[in-house]
Image (tube, rainbow, N blue to C red; front, side, top):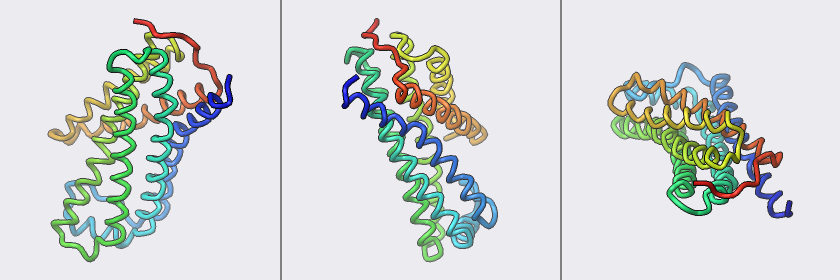
Length: 227
């Protein structure tokens, strides 16, 4: 294995860090906050009160989610390299995997920055603007982030399964994650479907950790493209 190959594989640690920073941020928020984070349909006054009284929790969560988003962005590179290799650069899978991953990282980053803005300025903003910012914060960090994560995971899993480049259970897990993540778009019109966001996110973490470990340890198969 070349030196550059080793470096690319080390970048795959981003998959582990993506999950670790996100989950760690949730634990940190829970330890620091005063009261539960309001749901997106909560009155704007409750949102202002939360981000004012739990500012430290919101700032900590924003910081860890920024790190999580950047870790995911780093992770996209080695996964996209794997997909391009096994797909031979043909078809839509390389673009689907890399584009979905970049979008997912971008949406999570935007969500974290919106939460940061609310933590720093909510008490001085109009209730209408607070409501809009909280809605955008939930949308980008929830439905849009998870759905685009499904494109990333699904595209990579299909390519890896065709070429048998990753363990079979990881590929099947990725296909299940992608299905649930894309179905979570239904939450835009039917809020109870938001449960699919949680399921898609959790399975996405497991997939990213598993693939990250496989790539770091060099356990993926060196195989060419297959139709």
